[in-house]
Image 1: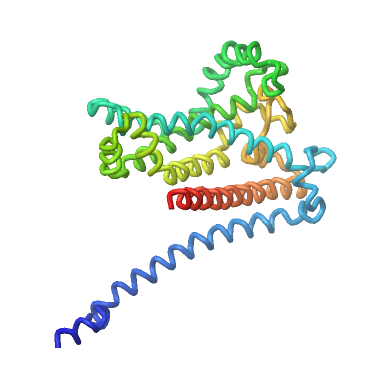
Image 2: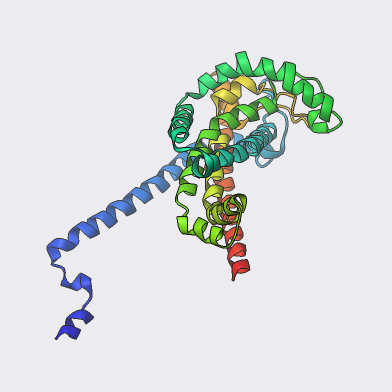
Length: 322
């Protein structure tokens, strides 16, 4: 008799009145996930309908053309795509090492009395509006960069195309730096939570094998948390791709492709914020709507590629261990 009861599924032993909460919760979860997907599709559809004139006139040339001339009604998004990707890469190159290093310091090295004040400052930095960062960038960061850091980079690395040409202050490099400052709290906070979730058994096992403190951090902690840290970088990248006001105020807003990081640039989000109210013709407005569609597609594409890269790295690491 006992074996017969044990062979019956647990769900069959429940009364119908106790099964409906599970079914209701499952249905609500499915509806929530479907709502998010529907919102993305709806936004994309509205942008596609609004950019119909531009798509019909320019086609794929819109993505590879460098000319943006509202007077002659000729529009191309290549300078904005270039500026968006380059400023995001600059931001990640600066923010990811700083964010991960800060998270490591807070979880592995900092004394207890120091951790909470630093975490509070980081959380406060994440709550500052982007326009405040833009104003600070114009009046404080840009003059300092123009008179000190950019001059040092030009005198030291001026033989490289990236650091050649005249120094204006407002530039692609300034835009990348301001975005790095804005995504730094996100990367630091997420990385800190991931590093805190590493089991202490990982550290203790490494210490038991004779590893030094640095080897424990490098092998036991970072090796265990690398997937989560990569996810934190992707979250920062998503913020960097869509950042608008702060970048608009310091990047220079010039629709040109330049090899020098000292030259002004433009991003997809900045051109929409700057010129949407000035769109005086249907084609102008349609082109700006297509810019928004390109930004949405670029964000989705970058996240998909990041997920593929993450699975590839994780899979290769698993095979090596095996």
